[in-house]
Image (cartoon, rainbow, N blue to C red):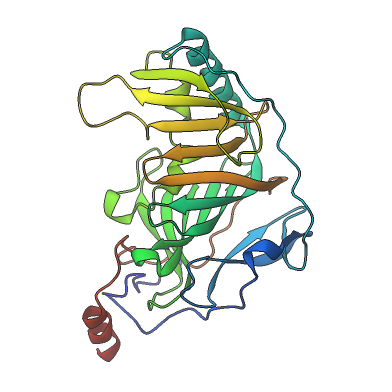
Amino acid sequence: MRGLDRRSQNPAATARHAGRPGPACRADRVGWGENVAVRLPSGSGRGPAALTATVLALGLAGCGGDGTPPRAPGTSAPATAAGSPDARDELAGMAALALDRRYAALYSFTGADGVARNVVATVANDGSWRVDIAGGALGGTADVSIVRNMNGVYQCSLSMTGAPVTTGCVHVATKGEKVPRRYDPQVQRLFRQWLPVFTDRDAALSVAAVQPLDGAQGGSCYSVDSIMASMDAPVDVGVYCYSADGLLTAARVGFGVLKLVRQVAAPATVQFPGPEVGGEAMGMSAAAPSTAASAAAG
């Protein structure tokens, strides 16, 4: 068996192997093509570096497309009484469809800092999935991907926008386990992690149908809250919107707002954006400059 590269993604462990930033596209000029690797702007305004995502079979293209994205299928749901059993059943049905949905999609995510970032979510035909988040690690200075395949869950560095990081993927959780909080960009949870909870009608949730979120591409929207007395809610509480065929079209939770831009067909499987490596994954907070400088000097 080929040995793993033992270099860490974390700049506190090594700062010598920073990936080369590629040319960024303007956020309003993301087009669509076929079997093309695309560089998506982080939207952070900190520099030209961008996250890279490859989407197969009518995947994202480079700069130049400026057509209007097609709206997702589905109709808006009228508001109903809070905690409606009908809404609970509807959400369970939507989540069941979502579990079987295969797609690649571009989303816009605006976090608590008010910065709009691109997110690419891919659920492949073999069940593996990957979520690329621009500016999702090291205090918004590094692009990050969370990948799950038959071997578990990995955190991958994608590019660097100012912090020295080593391109590669670190195993952070076994299959079925959550990403540890210190390595968790959170956004990936909206696509797959909560679906089994939504389908469980015995889960401690209160669900109500609500009007679509502003800017959402249609779909039925549901307000989801916890009825547990403890602070540890079973899901990220908020509003989740799904198209009639189970595609997440929008979500509003405590850490930000996600909205669909466009979807395309799913690839056969997802690929790591870099080699599997050992060492420590990237943290969510910004690395201390002195620590990174010391690592570079060493």
